[in-house]
Image 1 (tube, helix red, strand yellow):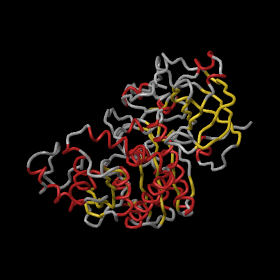
Image 2 (cartoon, rainbow, N blue to C red):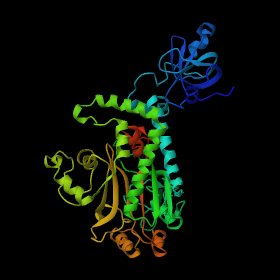
Image 3 (cartoon, helix red, strand yellow):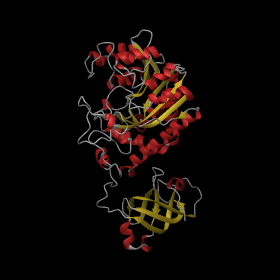
Length: 477
């Protein structure tokens, strides 16, 4: 008999039919009650075993983590907490699990312990919920853009360009580590490498996406990106997923409209489609908050925070105005900020971004028109020649979740900016071509997918919202 997913069994109103379910044992009580979960929902289905007519050996093998198949009658449940249960007539152990060695016991484990067992942590309620929410958000991203006529573009993972100019890239090479070929100056001779030049893992698909936007009109990428940044914070990963739309003929205002609309759409999708999982994660967050001192606790529950984003227009504030607010803020005056704001031109840190969102405006904030000196070369220079048409979206609890800009479409201005930053024209000839042949105003933004998942799930460490986190000194699994 074909097995039925637990989520479908729990929603089934047609009782007294014979069904088969397959899954993993969460708990086995009183030699009688199996809590079975197959990953399709956070809920378990109770399977009632006729222990008097089941061999002792089989009962001993029903342990936490074991994979089983049960066949029986779907009935209205006698116990509390579930509408239906399965009265088991046939039980088969598909895969044993040694109860003494199985790491994921039915008790509360620390997140650090679960990271060390990332291959099994998805079998817990919390990580099952997080990964189902991640999957729903991923689908919503594609659905949003596809419904609006965007084209999905796969930009290269191996690239010769550094889109961000940060230089923190993973090198890709086929050269031997011993006896690396050198040129006349004693430098590594990349002409003898696989691609004939120095290449890296991409930090962003933006530059390539721009070239496609200048032909297809509106495109988006959604793929892995890499940063060799030796950062051990709760907000950074070495490998993460990035969503990057690029739109021809969009100025910065249209770009901000798109980003706000997009974020609200995908958050709303998760709220509607993942109600059980988010309810569980909300309770998990509430329990975690109780451990904190009163002053550090969040004023809002998880679902309140999500609805807060859906119900509020994002406040649009210039960088200059934000600096004035921060300069005269109480934490700045009382030297409570780790990084004090004393002049225009400072690069805002997470503590400043969160102050603006959580304390000052009490809503999501879009900052725009940043100093040119702290932003990338491709951002459009404003008339004041001091600021660029950049924008960042700031969220409660997260800080920056989106970074974007109107791109510099003027060939001569772009050349000057590249010269000032020592970016070689010959390496970027293909990018400059889009400014030489039919250039037009265009804009785009990047959203780190894990930061979005972090916000929606209420988790506090980015390592807990990606299946197998890649961080400094850690490439397990």
